[in-house]
Each structure stands twice: as structure tokens, then as C-alpha cells.
Amino acid sequence: MKNEEYLFKIGQLAKACSVSRATILRMEEDGLLSPAHKDPDSGYRYYSVDDLLRVRQVLYLRSLGFTTDLIRLHLENPSDATPLLEDMEARVLNLNKTLWILRRLAEGVSDFSPSLLESPARNYFMKNCIMKGGAENLRVFGQKTLGEAVERGVRLDQSRGIFISTDRTDILHGCFSPDVPYLYTFCIPTLDPPGEDIVTYPPQTILSFLWDGDYSTLLEKAEMLGVEAYRRRLLPLGPLGGEILLPLLSRSSLESGQPDHLLFRMGFPVMRLEDNPPAQASDSP
Image (cartoon, rainbow, N blue to C red; front, side):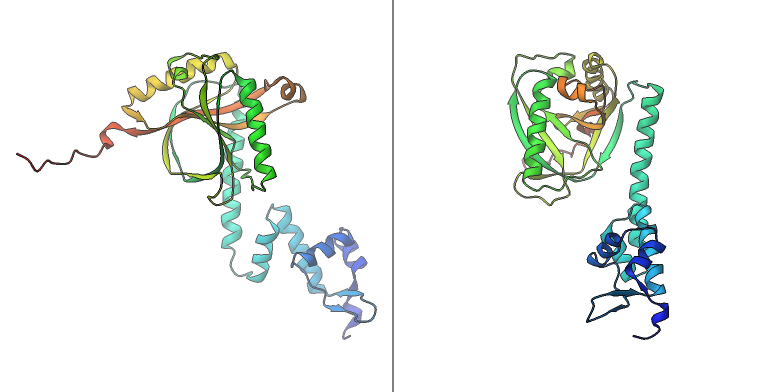
């Protein structure tokens, strides 16, 4: 073993970097680190100064929120920072969205501000249910759908909320009929490709509004959204849906089924009436 005076045992390396031996070993298992020398007889690991610097680099990248796979990719090709840049830009975008939402909560804003959003193609683990009743029945079936997704090994997309759509139109008219059964679709956002129970929602233009606060105002806002679509000459193309953006739940709210606070985006896909394709010319005179 050459230059043994410049090699460290695992305990020395761990102490210098303020981590545990288990952390160093886990880095090796993840392909992020290899000892400079491993004694074939004793099995002792020895690490170089370069290894020390590599451990510090890994710890720094982890502190920035990068995943093990991204860190490994960067270590394999350190001259290409594009994967790290793209990942951080995406996380910054999500952080800015969350910051905006939290500011709204802090300010107590619950106004009606409909907007058109361009929604990209997204994959969901989907389950349909025909039911009647209110929030409690929706909560129970939603929990059941989420539990089934986890049991099947679905990889949840943590950047998006659970999406619920329904074919009922009474809400858009400011009504709610708890005794009439309606079709609901629960959509759990997933990173998995389309397959059994996983469906891709195509890109859509969504007319929606952000809502928080008293449930009694939701019907009024939904009715206003229908009027807004008519005012903007927009044609609804699909069912009314809602995405839970930021649930802040306590134990009491989970038991009662009434969240202490629930930020919700409600809307439906639309098409501008002037975007309708022109009628085909007839061959007959």
C-alpha cells in the first residue's frame, strides 16, 4: 500500500466529515464513493484525500436537495451541470408556487380570480365511483383510492395534488343535491407510465379559480365560474374538477372529515368558440 500516511480509516473519514460510518458505507452502496484501498486480509477500508473531498461534495449536493441518482450522474460526468440545473430550476418553480400559496393563506385571501391555465399531459392512477352525499363520502373513497395506489406500488408524484372530477353540473348552477348519485373520478398523480388503472390526461386549457376558506362559498364560486366561461366565449369540454393544492390537516379534521384548511383549484377544460374548426364544404351544389 503506497503513501499509507495519506490514507484514512473509515472512522477517521467519518469523524472529519461529521457523519457516521454507516453514512460512508451507504455512499459506497449507492455508487457515490469507493475506498482508495481495501486490505484483502483484514477487509479494512482506506480512503484518500480525494475521497475526503468527494464525500464533502456529496454531502453538499445532498444539502441542496439533489437525489442520489442525480448526484451519481454528476460525479460520473462533472463537466455537465445540465441535469443539476434542470432539477433545481424545477424545484425552485415548485417552491415559488408554494410560497405564493402560503402568502395567500397568511393574508387570508379568498377572492374569486378565474384564470386560464395550460395544463401539460399528466399521468394519474384513476378510480371511478358513483356515489351520493357530501364531503365525508368523498373523503372515504379518496382514502381508499390512495391506499390502493400505494398497495399496487404506484410511485406518487409529490409535486401535484390529488385531483377529483365529476360529471355533475348542478354545482355550476349554484346547487348541490346530496341525495342524487353522481359519477366521481379520483386521480392520484403518479410518475409511472400509462398502464393498468394509470391514464394520461392530455394537454388541456383549463378555466379555473383558486379557492380557500368557508365551504359555504364554494357553490357560489362554482356558479360564477360557469358564468365566466360564458362571458369569455369558452365552451366547456369536460367534467368539473378540483385539485387539492395544500391541505393543512390536524388529527381532529381527519377524524371529522372537515379539514381545518384546504386550498383548492376548481375548474374545467375549455375551448374558445372561435377556435372551432370551420365546417367542411359540401360537394353538392
